[in-house]
Amino acid sequence: MIDPREYRSALGRFATGVTIITTCDSDGRPVGITANSFSSVSLDPPLVLWSLARSSRSLDAFTGSGGFAIHILGKGQEDLAMRFATRAADKFAECAYDCKHDGIPLLDECLARIECTKHHQYDGGDHVIFIGEVESFHHREGHPLLFFGGQFHSLAASD
Image (tube, rainbow, N blue to C red):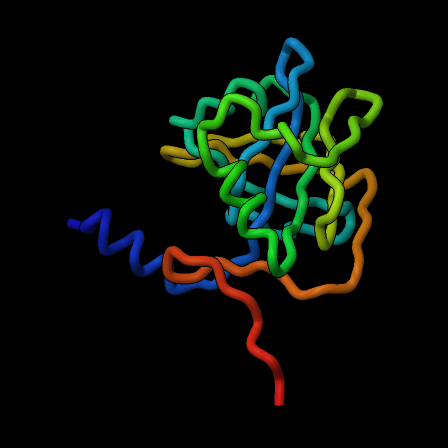
């Protein structure tokens, strides 16, 4: 039998980047969550994936939406990551963003942004796995915000 706490601890040994995924709900309100379950799937066609817990209050917005934006966070954006990791009523308050033509919020000041249409969604146990087809992307120079062992980190200076 696998101990869930020990399993989660083992998974925490894998360093990941930190993202904020955004969409809009059926009423057009912006929705966003912090996630580290992001990965590239394919270059041709350009596909990415991420997953969301079935227990998330944002699940209906993402399953009902035709697309989403993935924002890859940079060093120093821990506060932004924490804001979108909470159940705050308005995560977008005091946050600079614009909306795409379909209402999906696009955050300013991230290392990279990947705008996607939903290609597929799959059952993934206690999560839903979303596959997005990349429509456009933007990126800038900088160091990533990392998550390891339950804490935020940044890259060490090289010699």
